[in-house]
Length: 32
Length: 452
Image (cartoon, rainbow over all chains, first blue to last red; front, top):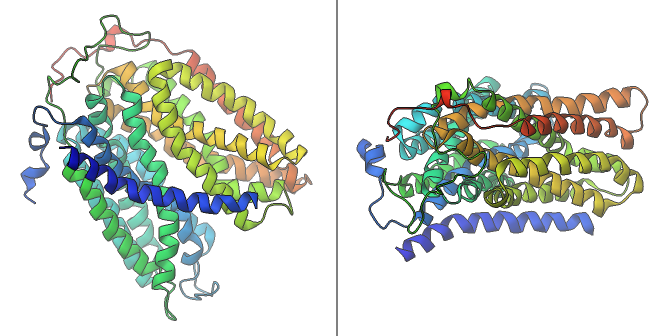
C-alpha cells in the first residue's frame, strides 16, 4: 500500500515540481 | 475498461484503505484542468495561423481569440451548477472520466478548428466542451475528499484545488515547449500542440479515474469521533441542494466568493501590463512575465495554506482575513507604486493572490460547515456560477476603468489607483456578507436518508 501511495504522489508531484521550478526560474528575472 | 468499473459501487474503498491515496487522484484531475489558466499562451499564436510570423489578412484578432477563455469559464460555472447533482449521484470515478472525455475532446475539436481555420469550432471545442470538462472535473473530487477527511476538510479540498492553480504552472511552459517543438515552415505548431495536450491530459486524468475511491458509508478516520459539541457555524445536519440555494446563507456565500474572485481575477488578467505601466522603464516584458509566474505560484500555494489554516481558525474568520487584509493591501498599492518600491509592490500582490486562491479552496469546506456533507459537491457546483460572473466582472472593471482614466488624461502609471479603490469597495461588500453569516435555519434541514 505504501509503494502505491508513494508512486501516486510521485506521479502527480513530478509535473507539479517541474512547473514550480520553471515558474521560479522566470520569476528570478523580476529581480535581476 | 468495462462500464461498471466507472460505477460508484465499484469505487467503495475496502477496509483499511489509506485515505491519502485519494488526494493525488483529485490532484491528477485538477492539475490537468488547471491548464485553463494558461490558455493565454495560445492567444498570440492563434492570431498568426495564416501569417505565421505576424498576423495576415484573414487571421483572427486578439479580441476574437480572447472569447475562447471567457466561454470556457462561463461553461465551467454553468456545467458545475447543472451537473452537480449528477456528479453526486454517479460518484467521482464516472464524473472524472466524463470530465476527461470533455476536456481532452475539447482540445481535439479545437485542433480541427485550427486545421479548418474555423473559430466557432474552437469556441465549441475548448469553450463549450472543454468548459464542461472544467466544471465537472472541478467539482467531481470535492465531496469525496470532504467525506474522507471529516477531521480536516479544508486541508483536503485545499490540496485538490491547489492543483487547479498548479495546472497553469505546468501548462504555460509545456505549451511553449510543444509549440516550439512542432513549429515548421508551414505551421506554428498550435494544431499539433492541441492534439498532444488532449492526449496527455486524457491519460493524466485517467490516473485520477483509476485511483479515486469513496469511503464506505459508515467509515470514519481511525480514532476520530465527530465532536459532540460542534463548533460555531459548523453544522451536523444536512441541507439538500434544491433547498440550499433557497437559504440566505447560500447567497451570502455566493457574494463572498464573487467579490473575492472579482478582485483577484481582475488583477491576475492585467498583472503584466499593470506592473510595466506602474513602473515604466524599470520592468521589462520578460520580468513582467516573471511577476505573473510569481503571483500564480502564490495563487497555488495560498489554496493549500489558507484552506488548511481554516481548519484551525474557522472558515468565517479566514474570509474575514481575506477581506480585511485585502482592503489594506489593495488600498496601499497606489502608494507603493508612487514610492517606486517594486519588492513591496510584488509582495503585496503575492499576498493578494494567495488570498484569491485561498478563497476558492476554502469555499467547499465553508459549504460543508453550513450545509453538511450530503450534497456538498452539487451545492459547490451551483456556487461556482459566482466564478462565471466574477470572470467577466473582474477583467471588465479593471480594463474599462483603466481605459476611462487614460482617456481622461490620467498618466498610465496612475490609471490603476481608482481600480484598486473599487476593488476595496467590492471586498467591503464581501466582508459584510461574511459578517452576516449565521447557521442555516432548521426548516431547511434534510430529514431523509443521506446514504448514497
